[in-house]
Length: 160
Image (cartoon, rainbow, N blue to C red; front, side):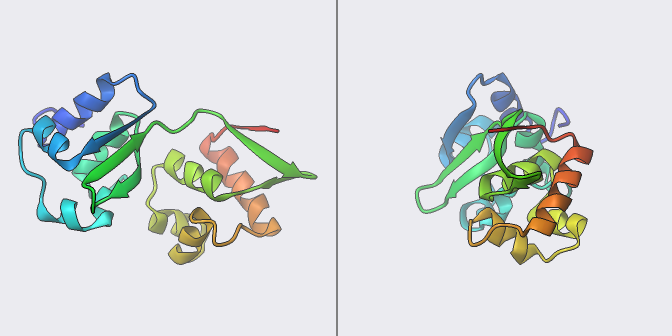
């Protein structure tokens, strides 16, 4: 995050926080950055996505070690959380049972949007969304592939 960026003060604020999770109102964020947020920040959930490219605002929280994990535009609140360093997973034989939280954690670890993560896996973005919301879990064959992707990305997990 470059000093002088509009969102640098948010980066500094989050970087200095010792909390694993914090919720800020949009007004509090505007006070921190000493500027108004664009109208899209108040009306579009996508503005708050954790994407590594094309979003200076996302660099502020991601470079500080956080991800946006909850967006409540009606209440005007955004929740930032530090991704865990080690995740606990269940296995069935030699296959990790990927659930919504684990898929999302891997994607966050890789610093990718749902669209970029889907492209990396060779699947459709709606599939990633359905995994992350728990509509359904990845199949066994996909679970094996996710294990390889996680290993390559340095994503650590412990087996329960």
